[in-house]
Image (tube, rainbow, N blue to C red; front, side, top):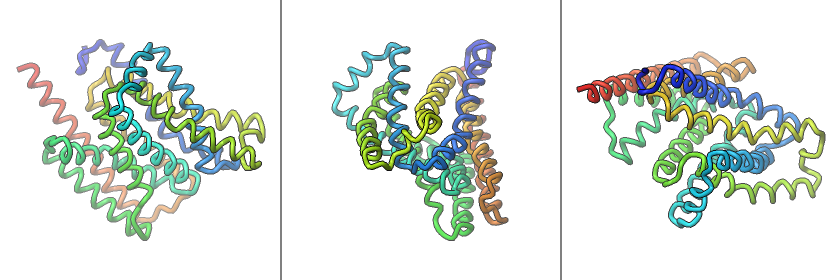
Length: 305
């Protein structure tokens, strides 16, 4: 048995799935950048991401036999309204990310996703009245210093990082209030942006500005946006139900670390001040992991008492 209460093979499979989802997320700049080099801008990529994601998300709903849950959500105006808000947030997040990795800002996307768990912690305390430990406060303080140094390093607020971190944190808060599981919610979110996506792609193609029909290779590349969006989310939701939250808390830093390496390897500016800012962010991330381990041990001790 492991800390999550499952068998060792279950934990190993969940660990593989968890690592897999964060590795795909971390490597995603290398998938969206070739789309940009093929001529597609962030909005065209977003259109294709919406179109092909809804097909993959719908397939997952069918495989999980959750069509009844989809119908239930569609009959609830309040749930649909909340999903419209979450859809708007995730659409902004996706668009900024795709624009950033195609315009030399991969390091800023890395910073944004390092910030995300710390912003989630702050949001939990502010909105859900969750208690933050001393280690948690220290992690947030280190992140604030890191962001301030990053602002000095880039000559202004790191708006890409802050937009990605804040929209994803807000997305998490909204999704926590929605009475729908991850797969159903994702399918409906994708469906809500599919019609605008289709309309935009058809307009581009009618004006001769689209790139889907340029070649078979370009078409396949743009279609890849679907599985790249949906499959890691499926792996994440599967792993999160089968492993301790403290382990998931540690794994979530894999994605921004991989993106960080990509940004540095591609020659993005990385002077000493920017390095120092990431040093504070990394320190905050490690303190966050320590706080998560501390909470996990306390919860385990309480269960055994």
